[in-house]
Structure formats: C-alpha cells, structure tokens
Image (cartoon, rainbow, N blue to C red; front, side):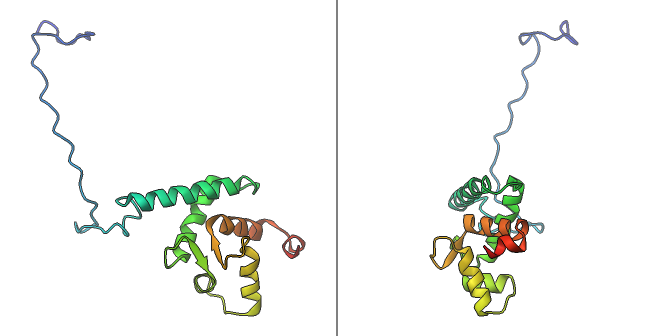
Length: 148
C-alpha cells in the first residue's frame, strides 16, 4: 500500500483494521498437574481477606522495623513467612505451645520465661510486631544487652 513502512500519527483509512483482541479470561489457579488449588494453597491469592491480613501484618512489621537498625523490608517478609509457619492455627498470634513446637524447644521454666519476655503486651501470645522485635533483639544484641 501507499503507507507501508511509514509511521503515521493516525491510522490510514485504506489499511485494514486489526482484529479485536479476545476478552481476557480469569483462570482458576492450578497446580502442576492441572488440579484446582484451594485458597489456602494459593496463600491468599484468591481470598482477599487473607491478602488484606498479610498486608496489614507486613505494614505493622515494617513500622516496627523502623526502630530496629539494619532490618530491611525483605527481612520483614522472611520473618513473616516464618511467623505464618509457626502460627499453626492461623490466628495471627503465636501461643507458647506453637512457639515451643515450631522451634523444637522443650517446655522448661526458662523457655516459658523467654517467651513471656518477648510478649510485650502480656497477652500470652506473640503477634507479628513482637516477633519482629524479638528476632531482631536475638540477632543484634550482645549477651549483656539480652540480659537487660
């Protein structure tokens, strides 16, 4: 045609119109064998409530991380994955038993006291910001700092 190879700021009236794009179909998440995944298996990709819960927890964790020098958002994400694995009942908080089972610690007076020390609000469970602070304290403080 007469406009072949030219870059025009408008569409040439003699050129055939491009075929319409097919509508995008939303597909259900599938595993490697083609089976449907449950919302639990997709880690919140289907369930908006789970995604919101995760986003809120990460926001709280990142806010807490500002008071922890050297702790970056990627570290907070890693800690959140550990927190989720430790939180067996998916309540958003880790109980003493969940903590002891996840870290494979015997239930001793010292272990329970250490858990209680991490529980800032004395609720009997550790929420995600408390978990972030405890992990940061464990890896960053000296023996003297941990005692105080």
